[in-house]
Amino acid sequence: MAAPAQRLSAARQNWHRFSRNPTAVVGAAIVLLVVLAAVFAPLLAPYPGHVGAVVDFRARHHPPSFSHPFGTDNIGRDIFSRVLFGYRVSLSLAAVVLGIAVPFGTVLGLAAGYFGGWSETVIMRATDIALAIPPLVMALAVTAVLSPNLLNAMLAITALWWTWHTRLVYSITRTLRHREYVEAARLIGASRAHILFREILPNCVSAISVKVTLDCGFVILLGASLSFLGLGVQPPTPDLGTMVATGADFLPDDWWEPVMPGLAILFVTLGFNLLGDGLRDLFDVEDVR
Image 1 (cartoon, rainbow, N blue to C red):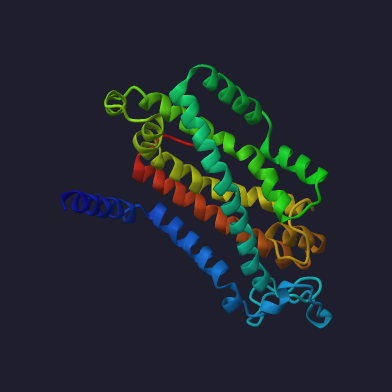
Image 2: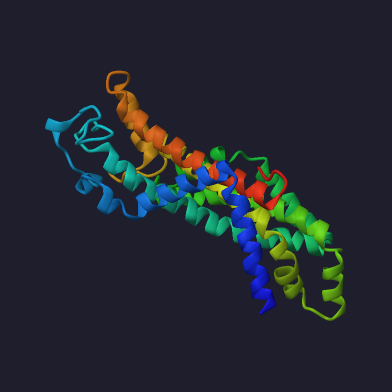
């Protein structure tokens, strides 16, 4: 019973520290609001039918109003409704990219940091080569060769995102592999898998959590950049980057068409960055950007 009580006490202490950090609280509130907006978009959107290929030329280019909080676009669709569904696309992109890249990069980092030798040389040199390629350039190349859609955008971003987690976990593993508890586990005959995933990995979770939180904002921003260039999600699927690109053609008269989706991108990116900074202060980890 002592161990669960200690874990509960530690969780309360962490929550107390987290709640006293206004940056973390604001970031968590923004992220929670965006997630809830995406999950309940069909219920919250005033015009859920405007998600698809709907045309209403009588309502085109209407400025923000009570009936259309973010205004309407060039074919009369409600921008607020499309932003809510656009959050679904952005969060799905971040979840899939990080769901693949983080485990893959973590396993490679553990292997390189613990085993050393030729495995370290091969893994880390491959990581260095991949890190030399800007993610946006790689994503542009992949989506330009393949047909531009959400799936290929996910693959393009994932192709290089594992490298950051490999380097992060590698550096932590190198400092932990000679610690007393790791040596003790090795002496009592624990398997390598046990040492890697039960002794070392739990001590990497804090840094990985901070990195993942910060990465969510960057992945969403990169996905919006691809869509802005026409290489991401294709119409009529609502995507924040596509809405900014389409609305930019009508500046400055119909300013709300690119500004409102752009502010939506800023809002979610800011939320994840504030939450990541708060978690970094909470876990007292070094800068993982």
